[in-house]
Image (cartoon, rainbow, N blue to C red):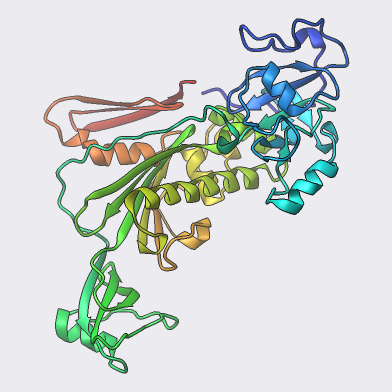
Length: 421
């Protein structure tokens, strides 16, 4: 993979070099392009074109074939047309945008904010007018034809050995919990966090969650028959998640969602470039993927008929750039040779450290990255398919926005990666 070029000094491109609108679309009903027109790029669709100054974002979207929901006729009443304008330097699009490239909020938006929630980073596309080159993200809830991401799961036969188990003990108020666990389960040397809330309800029974046979992490009054875990593949384009019963290994729910980082760049190098060219860009990318992961957990809980506080374990995998951004690490060394990883070993964090709202004692585990652009997702593929244990040469290919290939045989295993789209 070629290294990224040095950070360029941005100059506004001549209109003749502007990229054409998407095929079959007319930028402004076939009107001649003016030097005063502004380039607008919509994500995640990638639709782009030139529009005249003063055009509302909603009108620009309609002209470029971007379906933004609006049921009130553009009067700023329904709030269905919310968009997120992006400010900064977008080398891939040849755009440098700041807040002056969009009209400031007016009375219509102020009135709407007085009635319903509208976050600071969002605008009503029916009232915001374009004053300069702009990148605009259309969130899923504002899309008329939103994408539905479905990921199937194929479970193999494995021997369950969960890191977290539940133990039911007879435990009355005022009793010694550790002594009860020792007497009834033969568990000794357990750690008991000083701030752990131990509650009894008078039933003389309590359910205790124990991690790694060494630490008590949660206690509930009465019988609690399950603790849940989540496994997520944090991909460049989509996030795929699965909800499991830790005791039985049963998959309770499966869900997927678009990775919102796509608005910063469709491919990995574009996102690294965004971080290089925009101070604080890595914070934006980290926040975006963590919020999306948290929303995915919501989907899993809804489909699985459960609540967040039952989730005590998470396993997360992704390519090295997704891995670094999720952890809040600087991805820029991965943009230039020799593509250095800031951290390659397995990582164990509290879910709270990743801004995930699950059980307070939940832990998030990230598999190790292998090297360069061969990440934890490839490590997961190898663990799941075990090509190195086969008695013949095996080739495993993971085709995504970033693709990995693993060749194993004759006592050797080789891996490589390449961008695909």
